[in-house]
Length: 420
Image (tube, rainbow, N blue to C red):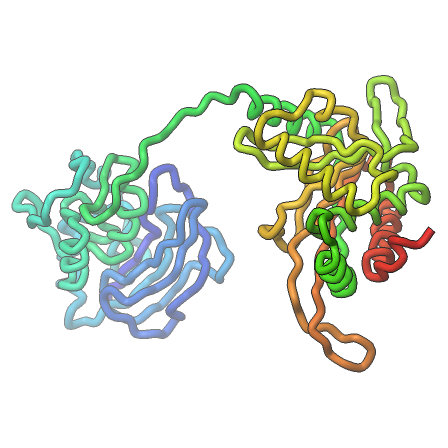
């Protein structure tokens, strides 16, 4: 009986190969026309390959994970004798290079590749579907209806086996935009906009590039139970009187400052040109603040000398000044360590970029309530991941982990924040 060789078709501009993601058939399976054969993944999309004929699968190209070149055999199908000649005849009418029909004669010469499929211009905006009279198009009623619903003229669709299938239509919809095609029901895309990188945005870009270029970053993340400190914060706010309302940030800053004397390498600046690390006695804490102009880092001077209420006041003042563009230039320099927080956005974990020439940056993440074992019982606890990124030229992983563990102890036992 004749065999139909379904070669992997050209499924996108510039695509030379595709990976087999999953098989929908195996050797010995009976398949019908338009039945899915395999899912193929390129570096741009995943496309479902469908059978252009009915018959018995006699050979497949490989296993899931194998990479197949465009034009290589994907599946061989033995055609039913009743329909074999018709299928062969139909396929030979417009045989693309991606699919050939052969007899079982092993001496049959190699097929000659056909010329490229139709590449006639396509309209920049889709017109209502009209069947082409200049090309003979074969497609199932389902494919024709789908093309009509999408406003696609099937004459513009490259067929993998002389017969247009859903996979061919999918490929056209995926890559057709490169030719200016857009289905009628698709929303108009917003025009491209070129934005010159200037001012604050350029300064941020330069600083971040320099930081990643010069500093070998590493990030350590630890989970911290903030149930107790959040309860303390609620009590303090309930009895604050005229004092500012507390967020968690001032309390974290107190913990940071109290642990610095044990880990002086964290509160440092590295002059890599001079080869000198300066370990600072005072904590001048940079506070990453999002503004309309971009990220700014005003500095809380001598944070170690301020209590939680004074810190709350200074945090609010500097944040307002940064966002209103009234922050002074001297308030934006001289930091020795930085804290960055996304507030309620938080995220599960972050890998913050160091504010060069500092050697560390701390990033508290979002607080979530989850069940947790406390002794032999399960309780609802408020948990937060704390991230720290460090300059590996100056700070070892052991130092970073030890510092965060010291922070964790203070935060989880908040009474220690107020102990001398």
